[in-house]
Amino acid sequence: MVVAHSQSVPLTRELVGRLSATRTADVRARVAGVLLKRLYKEGSDVRAGQGLFQIDPAPLRAALDGAKAALAQAQANATNAHIAAERARELIASGLVSRSDLDNAQAAERSTAASVQQAKASVASARINLSYATVTAPIAGRAGQQGVTEGALVGQGTPTLLTTVEQIDPIYVNFEQPAVDIERLRRAQSAGSVSVARGAVSVQLTLADGTPYAHAGTLDFLDVSVDPATGAVALRGILPNPEHQLLPGMFVGVRLSSGAVNHGFLVPQAGLQRDAIGPYVLTVGPDDRVIQKRVVAEALAGPEWIVTEGLSDGDRIVVSGTQNARPGAIVAAVPYAAQGGSAQAASAAAPAAPGR
Picture 1 (cartoon, one colour):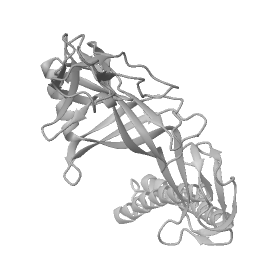
Picture 2: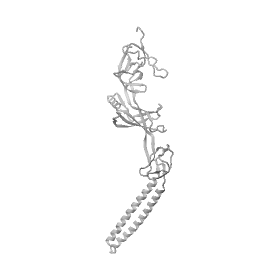
Picture 3: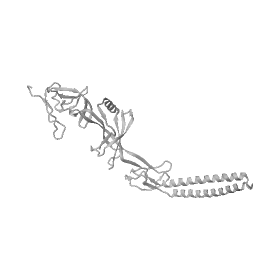
Picture 4: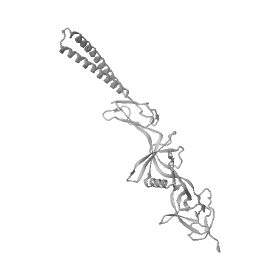
């Protein structure tokens, strides 16, 4: 048997989650051209602004040169129009130029000035297009596999997807928690039986091989609605991933610490039994008679159940030999003891000696 003691018990929940990148950016060709070469190693970490692909810049450079020439022509036309307009303004007073000629000269001046601005915009656009010939990483992260090979024509019509960059440090873990659990926690908090964690809620991971992940994270998102198909609420945690041990798409175990039971009892799993009515434990009374007690088991805490109702401090709970412990039977209670690191007791409840 074990002796029940009221204590503050951390309230945790074991869930299943899936990892995802905190930021994902599709790298696409923004101008049309022939892809000349890849500038990065696939699967490597890249910096924001680092060159990833080189598109043939020759047509774009020629377009920039043409735009510059058009700007020079527009500026020359604007200069001539300005001189003509100034001359017309000087001669209008002497009557050597008609009012109509002055209006035409001033209109030409304004038109050529606008043409200069348009030509400058064309030069700026051509310069931007030329800069797009070097496709850069929009964010820092890990660059994926090359989507197209060298020699391919990209950027025609729909922007061509060249690769994807994912930021995985920090990394997200997405998981769901039943809405009934959240509502139960809120009711327990209102009743004062549970203290909800203040500040950041701790999130810990267990890898697929059962190894605990070294870095703890925090809960950073709780959805405002319940999925009608599953009856669960979506949650998301964020964790540091400096060694890039965690990768997007991996399934992991999620341990969510949501608070603490103020007055709980830890009962080994072997000591909690269930029937058609619900959970119960067998206790040994002062007269060594077995007593059945109905309990409320809140959650599992490792190998033990957190019991919040039905037990009293000092209750002796039967955890082994339950086949001999029937309600009302007299037993000899022996303290629970593990053997060889296992959770099995050497002896917990045995029938009393005859004649007792």
